Length: 478
Ligand code: ZN
Ligand code: MN
Image (cartoon, helix red, strand yellow):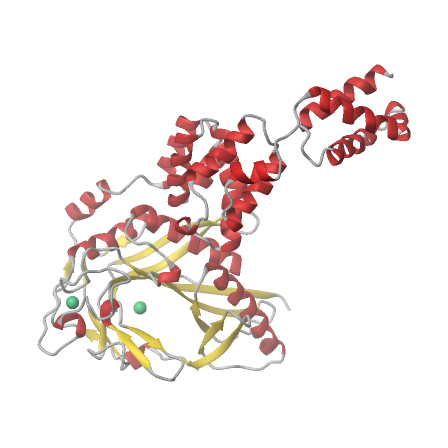
């Protein structure tokens, strides 16, 4: 079968406003449960919600960053459903006209080609309370989250692989964090992503029904859940069966999706305009002023990095596209003046490890000063690159101090010529055959001899010196 995978994402992002969406309660994460609440966000009868301007402005800023139309008039609508975390019996959301529509996000696909993913809409909503389920079958409700402003971003079904979905999420997150309108921390729930996925047999046109996947707690889980679901749906399609539209839950421990419920349809919610919150009117002046106050965007930052630090455009793009990495980079360059070295290390070692672990900058086990210290060893030629990578792994995984670790394991490289010459001569004497074949024109023998010297020095010989000294001696015997 010639299968096409069709993926659309719905992402809820908590806005980093001072107060909640419709009341004056503090919008903060991590407070004592049920302490930042009032009659409005608790949904008590008779309370009157008032729209938070900061939330409106943040939503417009996101819309501008993603090339959306900002709609002149939009309304808050009631999405009705009954659930313990929603005491009003409805969520204030946007239905007919959202505040922003028709945008796009550019990503790179598996082959490195640029691809535009459409955005249907960005709508304003309020968050619900948080239910905490206990192991003894009781549940607690924390209303601090209830009424926190959200934007829901709905993509077009333009993605065709788990890889693309992850690239889309990374770009989305990087941009929103850059704009400073959300923390986008999946582990704290300030970014939540639902995936809609189905597959189509391009030869026969047969399709599976769209399955929504919930409970995804990392970008890696999104990618893995999609890969799992595609394989599961292939079996159904190949057997010529059908399965109803449904919501499935991702189980990260067993790596599979599990049926939760058949899907609600839009009609089930009986949307209707909210009578309390007036329509949102957006003027061109407001759009202009938000546009002017937008922080430095990725492209501008990248250009500045090329200019200031003389790094390549490619490297500058990689760093600039990630706000936290950019900040880290700018801090690190204050400590280490070899910018090329900082750049290479951050991109090739740190970023790679962080992606593998899905870790963030707050939970790094070492300080910037410690990283600077490690790079200083490399810059002064006291350790070679391989040793630096090995030390960094220990710093990243176990939080070791680079100076102490290098000292304890005596990793300082041998640059003393006398010492290296001795090892070189030993190796040349013990490997007459290889010396012969090098002299007979076989260059591969040189690599072998260098490898032997490195091995005998326990990886500590300065590789450049080794190379130089071996060649010197071999050429003498020609
Ligand atoms: Zn409140
Ligand atoms: Mn929503």
